Length: 414
Image (cartoon, rainbow, N blue to C red; front, top):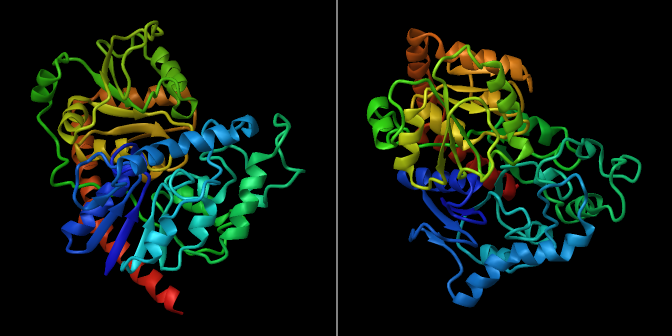
């Protein structure tokens, strides 16, 4: 079976890393997987990107052009939005190929238009990395218009002018006539899709993101901290997200509130932040903060996770963040809120701690519970690693995807 993985980028961004890992896990298992992207930066011969310089420029310009076209129409509830209006020839390229299955990932208007996706004439599997596929133009939203359909009556009162989300949703209904096999990495996103107007009759499966647990494994904590120039003997917690302290969805304000509750109760506690550099005027949180910046290679990330005593994910909305999977694989417990896809990563008091949703006091309690007992922490580290091997290892996830591919082919033939 020949499978084509389709994503906007090969390794830039969380969805790209997840897709790239699935691609190579399949290849390592003997499957014939190829990858098609708009932005190719890995230097990988199994990944096909634009070949000519003009094609590369157009691929990079595509999101900016779409943004300019819709700038005046942007709704106030969407930090990130995609209307999927710019046509491409990607569907023609895929339809003319010899692949048996097209596996879509984060294409979301940045790589293919809504109409392009509807014109695919091969078996399709689509892994959702956010909510866009069943929403309007939003990638994430706290509104529930996707449950009932986007109408004039259920539009939020704080929006006005052109209803960009309703228009985008109507175009999806028009062009996506044939249900495809949907995969979500978390149960939360699967339940959202199943309850949506657009996808409630589509086949939906839950398959987690994969990771190579043979490569992603713990590094000696003392050695990791020494290499990263971190203090050797202090409790050290880790927080990471692309520009994470500025993205409300990532919940840094909730983490900050939780750390305020820990003042004086965890002597020596320090925070390690990756995904951004220190800002010129950082807010004082009462603890020393180390900034690791943007790390792109797996070895540096393994060192970072291994150096930390716990990873903190205070997100308000998240699917199945790669950071959580990576941390567990390195034997690092995770403290997060009991919300969205995070319960698919954290088994409460087994691989970390699940705090009451968006409750900084309980988040602080969870951080203290993980760190204050060394014997307990060592047990959590062992269980975190085992959970990653049992649930997220390549051989576990690949088997599930091969079954979905077979299902997609049989369903398409019928």
